Image (cartoon, rainbow, N blue to C red; front, side):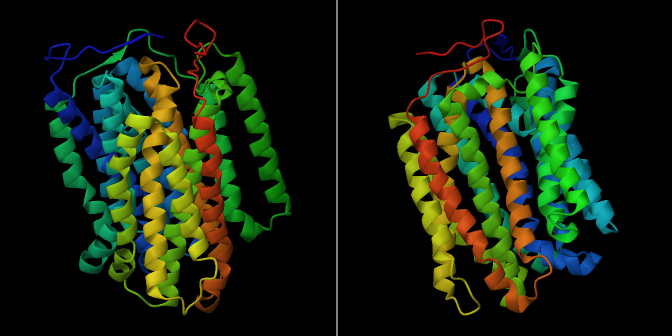
Length: 477
């Protein structure tokens, strides 16, 4: 499929200033999506007390957003190809803003979970569409690598700074403020996108793959649902076994359906390239590690040590600083020497961060906690740019939206899995036993870091892979 960019009211060759302005507008939307993945985490104990929600209900409060976001990202990209990227981008902002208002006034746990799911619908129309806009605005590979570095820096900052911002807002204005804060940002982004973002669409847009969309939703939702509810219903109970069977059957059916469709939701041929597959696996691993870290520390600091949301959020500052400083440096490394070195650095720092806390207890020193957060933040900062660039570079530039959507889906799926794993470890555990119960989670963080060493190895051999059916997918030897 050939994708053409048709700017509205601007010359075809946009100036460098305009290209970077487009990047800034798209990064603003990315900041919203990333921050709402983590900003709620720090307020979970407060939300639980206010709305009388247990640990599993709190997990759904977070994962309702990430699951819907993960499931709909690719279809949102297809809608953008058909109706225009700027138009769908603005639809996403409007839905996200309206859902944020609904979250802010939610009277019950069920209403909050439903509003969070609606937020996920809006966010699904922002992330991959914005990345496709950025990549199309940056035709030069080196400039694109630097832009992706900035993109990753903003995304890393939003994810890591979410708990800090959330803690400050909750202490000052209550938990509902973490949703109210989205509204003015949405208004600004809508205004700027109308002025600066050019419209673009595919010359022959992909058709929506409804069977694939339904099956993917079952696979993603079922997998995470089992992780959240498994400890409650019993891992070997009849409902759990039935859920396992549904997920496996849906996964098999998804592979069969996608391999037979001329325009599938997710091209199976893309995963034949080790670089692209590694990027997807790496995206899942990085976000599992980040979200396990954030949730376990939130409960440990507030329930075990009695810290306020602001103090617990402040403890994540080393993570935010590490992610913010290292992401642009990682982008420059990718542009200069490729993804292998920054991915290797990310693997080392994430592994070290997890290993720091495998012996966590109530007497563990605060400096060690801060060191672990800093190491995880640095690893996260180094990881995003090479993962995104590897996925995008594994396809022709005009298929950047496909690559961006798949890796964004992997990120959000990893975030949902991380919340489910961490929540499963500490659900129904008293404050006195939380530290000990969380120890397996720190081994999970270290294992995710170690997995990135394999991703770095795969990134060395990066032939471009696209779909073979219509001449779009050719591997470059």
